[in-house]
Image (cartoon, rainbow, N blue to C red):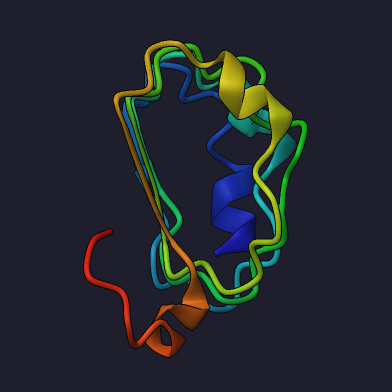
Length: 105
């Protein structure tokens, strides 16, 4: 999967990138910041993926970002706050099962 993602660098018109359930994927390519047309990014359940702080700076069209049960998430990139087009951020921590008194999420 990593080698496939590295070959996507010329797909600047790509609008949806779903790499959920990619357990062997270690990191996203630097070229991700070239995907200025990307509107949906899903990295849910990608258990080996490490945080990519600098790869969000040009994702100005991103409207949906799903990080559902992202196992190694410790913090969100600062650049995410600059994506004014973002309308949905699905962020659910891996340890949600421990919140036995939770009534609203």
